[in-house]
Length: 465
Image 1 (cartoon, rainbow, N blue to C red):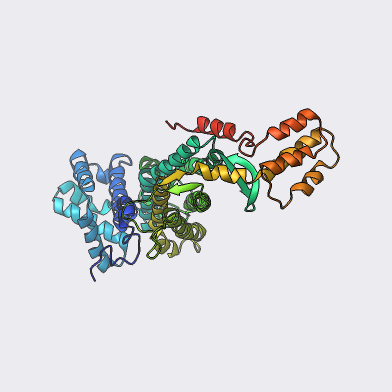
Image 2: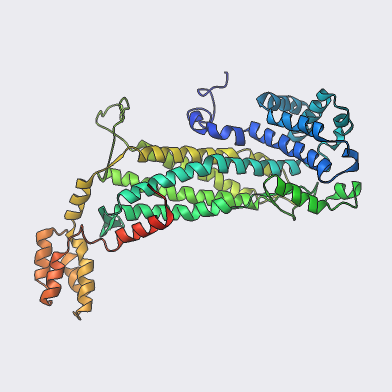
């Protein structure tokens, strides 16, 4: 069968193909091949212009322009040529080297033809691969994942700002607890996301270019008087990565583990968020706008299900399974290298893509929410027992004996309404002013500093209009 969205084995390119296409240019196999070609071309130019190898002294602007223009116009047809070459070489990076050499031969430029063996000079395959993977991750995070995260974060922060004063009955252990505000609880999520986002945005992406076992053996043998570590650092930095001076044949991937674990933590926070919103929908705190034409159930016409939050939760779980495996496996390599990292890294894009699908789903779900203030108010009005915390705490300041135990006897396991609260307070032996103050309390007003805390955090950390 021909490959299409219907015949694709993975939903990333099938059912969810439209949601993941922004990642195709960076973390697909085409993206990997393109990044490899970029590293090879830029290394060749670097050897001529910065390392100033005498054999490349004739490589000037015309030759560099030929190479750079080809790189700019690199498309899937060239990547397909690499796959054709790989069918013979059975080595993907060698196939890239041969493609570049084939291009040089097609230019018929005498200077490039005389310099052709400096393509892939001094490199082991992993010199090209590790830099390519670093560039892939940099592009995918900067252009796709981080903007998607920021959009979702802003949506949650916007909802928090709009509901910062909306009183809500809190629940601990699934039971009624001291009231809070909805906006404060959403601000908590934003604060958690911000910690992870700050780390993601400062995560260094490492790279190395130091030969077969990390010692510049071939480089030093061919040109013993050149500062190869210095040039390596300059090149790796120049292409936008952070230089790792100490490696075996492979860059050890510790930074990838840090990145994927960080991303996994952010995803876990969103799983928690999705489940909370799902639960708030379930108890009626939010309604969901019905989308014309959509069906909630094949048999129950009334259903409007929280499918976006469920979709997000499920995809975040798959994303984290992949990301956590990558983080645990990639830093482990037998002796100076084995090939297990290579095959695992081919799934790098999958962990990012499942994450992206999830962010889009949560964002879509948030766009359908309508606050049900009546349900929030009714929930609060049915749980006056939560004011027992205030009563026992204030009674402590009045010198009452065993205030906690007194209130516990009157409230534990019992639902109390407004009249019940009035009766309870009137039964207490307290100064008139204290009793009057307790009688004035309501669950809706008993939110402590929740609104203030939400406002302070959002004002300090956001630019919500």
